[in-house]
Image 1 (cartoon, rainbow, N blue to C red):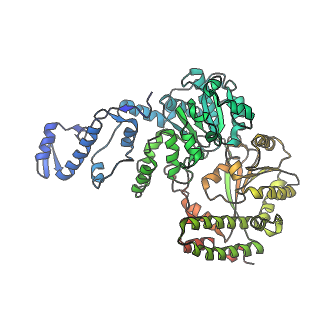
Image 2: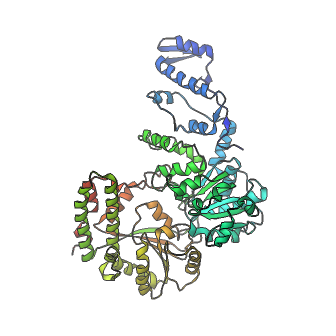
Length: 611
């Protein structure tokens, strides 16, 4: 067992070309004048000032490490990420003269963390009723290895590669080998409770699951868990709760759990939220997080994940922010090396991972504005120009104003009725509705199925009514107002009923966790300006089990903010890719008035296709 509190031996040695320098030779070096001296049969140039700086630094480190260094300090030293350290002006001089190496034992451990294929093979019993793909077996081996070391693990496989089944394999292994005594806690979005229960019953029926949620238990049963919860959970292997339940149920943070698993762990990316603070207060021997987007907006997301997984490894929020700011010339510095051992990420696009997944084609579906849309859009641009001047000296009000107008622009681009709230939704008044008809008539003629995503709950029903007319049959709708009990049944109907041609989903409620491989078309009716979130939604269809090629259609109104944001997303897509897949936040509220008005301005010739 290793763990974050482990103490590692640490020693400092002086060498020249790999040969250790004795104390006598060091004294000779220090009393010599600058210039060339003969050392170990070689002429060596000596810079006394730099040599003294290096010696002072490492003698100080050696004194601090007299009784060894903590595991966290050791990992930072190895990665070269000085988080939480004061870095002086001589840092570059010192860093050019030293290197830190792991000893044989630690090297073997770190190599096993970084390459699960080198770990001992996995022996899962017949109780596990699933045939794991090779990369999934490696994932279970890796999770098992980190949990045995009591280190937190982030399984960051691309959406649709089967993170759920890998965790079920781990839980079954822990139960059969009593490696970590239960009960274990599983925290998931409310919409995925039924999905997890169903997958567990299918692949690991010997695991005893308790779903502690109003959708599965009566109020009286839930209230009864408050009294001696540890005893009541003893007969269960896994207790499952929703994120929203964690702050509401005191017993979640009072029970000493074996393993705590967070699914869709981007839910704790905001460290200041009540939900995140409650989740981080959960007590456990080991922690695992599952997410297809470890960096959803910016590097602070990664810090919040690791503050739960391996607290202290990335320092405090303030220390981490200072490190990132200090490393602006090389944004990632040693950060990639520091977090790499605890993150396992495989991509669907990597044919060495999965060779039998069909192709995914992404297309931009450009739409024009109708006359009414263009008029409303221009009125809103003029209104923003006059309003933003009035709050120039009030940063919070200015941000709120800008966000409100950004929503207005997107609503107008969707349909005038969405912004006006008149409920009319006449198809001829929206360029996107016209484009949607053109596209879905082809989909219907091929008897294929489509997912339609929007970030706005209020337009889901009008879209479904319009699409029912195009397809000649009604489809399904899932939004935040859909009861949790009904969501799994909606998914089942879409997957199994050939008569259901389309599924309209709000991005927040339906963009994660659901398996909707019956669809071969994904339509983003309005763009979420975070590509990671948008990709999560696409992966409801583009995942294991998909037999057809998937075509993704991204609706963009020409000459509007939608087209300019698309260009910004394209430019920023690679910003975090060197560390992990993700995109950086586009800080629209921090733009100057001139930049903002240029961004939202209407190019009438593009928007109206020149008429």
